[in-house]
Image (cartoon, rainbow, N blue to C red; front, side, top):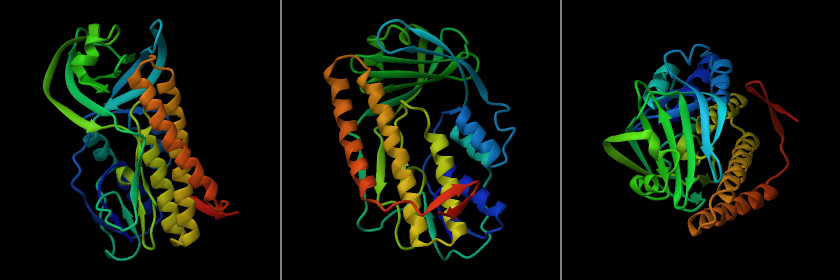
Length: 317
């Protein structure tokens, strides 16, 4: 079997295959790692349990509070999460070591050129990521909805950190801000721009391949569960490879990922529906609902599940 590409899903799958004593070949990809990610308790528990990384949070910047301004007053809530870079996380997961032939089933996190696949996107949402200096050091992530988008802070060390702006330019969104804007003292370095709308590749499988990682699906950062989803992908993909890569197992993998993506869209839709009553927020709701309806129709057309995941193995129903 072959692992192609890099990222959390591929490295987690490699650890699981090694744990099961299965050989694989690995071809790394060229996707640049994200400079910052937020790991919640769900992601930490998955990586600690399934991947054996109990000490993962050591050395990462701990967040203890979440402030949310999504219309009305600012809420202050207890929160447990950890801020790190994707490079640091991948280092903790370890580098896959090719232990077999580059033949057989392929788990693709990059380089999907199979005919007949397409991306299903919930609209288009411009996002900007910029390093910032906060007015004071803190252990708080702040989320704020403004008229033309939303802002999210990711603190790191010594009053520094990152700021994500979705919808318009960061400067424009900060000008509309009452919560995040006053927290920022200065911007530092270049602005990184990316597309943040959720997207899914369909179909997710072929005769000899499965898509995983960002090649399979990308989540909206508004929900903050992308890393946990990547680990769940890896657990299920490794189970399919262990099962023998049958057509029914590949179909089960696709159905479970599609259901998870639909659940993500439903959650994102609620966030956008609760945003300010402006044209920008109404457009996000409409785009998300359109993608969600497509997912629901595809799920209804799929056959009933033939497997369930027990631990790290697929068991026939």
